[in-house]
Amino acid sequence: MGLEEEQNPGDKVLTSNGIKVLVDMKSALYLAGAEVDYINGLMESGFKITNPNAKTTCGCGQSFH
Image (cartoon, rainbow, N blue to C red):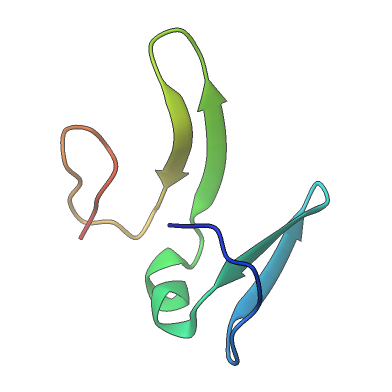
């Protein structure tokens, strides 16, 4: 995940609350149905991805298969 200045050909464009999210086509296959949220608390802050298609996840919840 990273910040991009411009859209690449083939990117899927999603907009939520006025924020444009670009997803490349290969990643879109793995992220179909996923929810992305931003957490900002005392113990953690950052993006949290909930992916119903994930078969396994790591202990920190940041990677999945």
